[in-house]
Image (tube, rainbow, N blue to C red; front, side, top):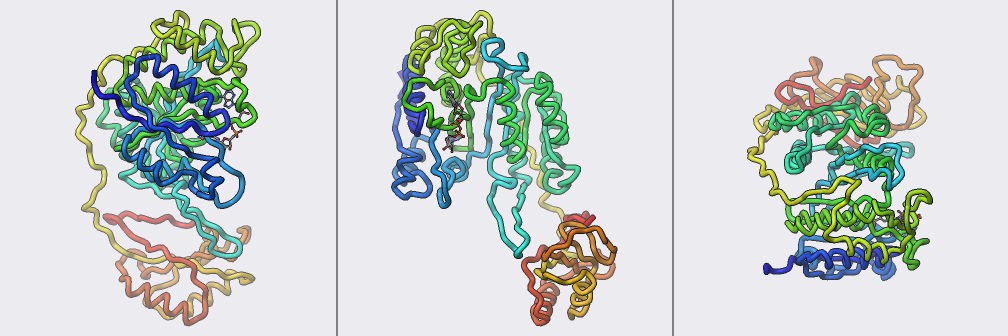
Length: 481
Ligand code: NAD
C-alpha cells in the first residue's frame, strides 16, 4: 500500500467540529489513504489576540502537507481582525476558486431541477487586492487590478477543467462595455486562450444580463469563468438557486497548494446540537480526494451520499414532510452515508470519477506581447481642491509653468473642461490631464517632475498622478466622458 497522503485539517468553530467529525468518519470508512494533521484556526486564535486567526506553527503544517480541509470558522465582529480566508488564499497563491452548483431535484427543493454549473472564479486580483486610498475629504478609491498573466492562468484553468471533466461549454462574464481596459483584458485573454480549445462552445455575456440568464435558466450554462468580484457574487447566487447553499463545497487551487471547504459559515446558533448538515463539507472532501488522486474513494462517497439523499434520510435543513423518510442528525446522516458506501443511486445520476484525467496536450500560449512599444505621452494629475469652480481650477492649472499643456479637466470620469458640463456633480477631487499639444508625441519623466514642482510651488495639493502611455500606438488610458 502506498504511503498515506498527509492533509491538514481544521475543525473550525460553531457547527465546524461536528460536521468535520462526521465527514472524516465517512472519508475514513471509504478507505481513503490519508494522514491527518490537525491545526486550530479562527475564533480561539483571534481571541488570543492573533489578528490573522492562524498561528505560525499552523502555517508549517500547511506548507508541509499542501492540502487543507477546512471547516467553517467564526470571524469575530469588530475592527482589526483579518479575514483568514483571504490571508490563506493570498499566502498560498490559491488563484482559482471552483464551486460546483448542482441541483438534486426533487430531494432538495429548487426552482431549477436541471442545473449543473461549475463556477471558476479568479481569486487573487480585481477589486480584491484591497488596495484602497482616501484621497480627499470626499473621495475614496479602490484599485481594480487585472493582469494578463492572472487572466490567462484562470482562463486556462477553466478550459483545462472543462477538458478533464468532459464539459461542453465555457462561458465568461465581464463588464467590458464599461471597463474596457480591465474587464476588456480579461475577456480578450479568455477568447485568446479559448482559441486553443476549439472542441468547446465558448460564449461571453455582459455580467448583468449574464447573471439574469444564469438565475433564470441555469440549465443553459456549463462552466463559467469570472473575475473575482462577479465570481464572488454569482457563485453564491448559483449555489442558492441550485437549492443547496448548505450543501455545496468549494476548492481553492493554486500551483502548489489547495484548500477545500463548505461554502456556508459556522452557523453558531445550530452548534453543538447534532443538527447541522455535513454535506457541504463532505462535497469539499470529495473534491479534495479527487485532487489527491483518490478517485475511487471520492466516487464511492459521492454515490453513497446521493443514495442517502434519494432514500430520504435528510437533516433538518432539507427535510420535506411529503418526500423525506426520516429526519436525521449530523452523525446519523454520516452513518447512513457510510452504510451505503458501495451502493449507487437509482434516481439521481451516479457519478464516475475513475477515468483517467483527459490529459491536455495544449502548449500554453503567451498572450502577453512583451515586444509592445510603450510610449509615455502624458500625465493625469489628480488634485484636491474644495469650494472652487471649474473655471478657477482651469485658470490656476493653466498658469503652471510646464512644457506640457493642460488638455482637459475631469471630475469622477466626466469631462468638465474645456467642455462645459453644468449638470455634473462636482467634488473636491479633480483630474487634470497634461500632454503635448498634438496629444501623441512622447514626453519624458523629467517633464512630469518639472510639472509637479511647478504645481507644488503654486500651492496646489496634488494627490496622485497616473502616467499616460500608448502601447504600439494604442491608447492605454481612458478618455473622460
Ligand atoms: P452561516 O452560513 O454560518 O449560517 C446561515 C444560516 O444557514 C444558519 O443560521 C443556518 O440556518 C443555515 N446553515 C448554514 N450551514 C448549515 C448547515 N451545514 N446545516 C444546516 N444549516 C446550515 O452564515 P452566517 O450566520 O452569516 O455566519 C456565521 C459565521 O460564519 C460568521 O462568523 C461568519 O463570519 C462565518 N463564516 C465563515 C465562513 C468560512 O469559514 N468559510 C463562510 C461564511 C461565514
